Length: 218
Image (tube, rainbow, N blue to C red; front, side, top):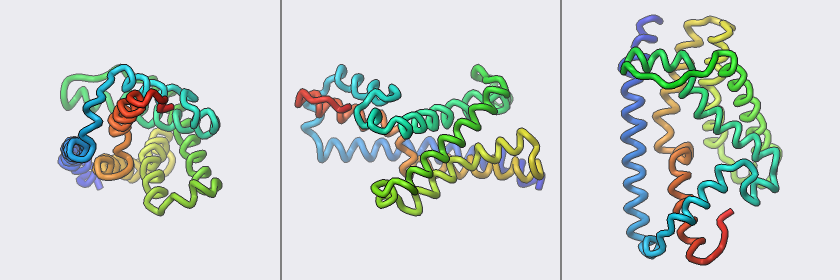
């Protein structure tokens, strides 16, 4: 088990990061090429002001009409994404690993705050899951893959929480924590989870288009 853990935190981790970064670059390059081929007119209406407005309004909680019409979902949606990005990046234990590997680190959250944000994330994930089950229009559009992605995204948080509180076999929980995180990294560029980054490009394109028409994208 120790050898497997060392493999996961060594070669497997590097491989996951490489697939993650290269996969995102390839996907972004491909989508850019497709847009240049099929939506050339879009680039004739570049408007930085509208692009920024489109992004900002969708980054502000309840900043768009669609989100204001679903306040519970909107709050859960934003808490989910803020914690999804913030906790792994600013977790003290993760930053210690970055410091050891590269000699640099980011500001770190106190463990108590990271622990609380993990609970907030899991509650937000539960709300998003219930929404997929309860709302008929969302359930109709949801596939087994959508449920799998939501569960996979939550798995590193669940196992990390269990490991931090030493609930269950610690070594096994840590192995699962790292394994789920690496699977998630590998899947992100090739699935809907890529919207973490693609969101900005889609909002920019909508901003260009709606700005040309004089209509709001939010």
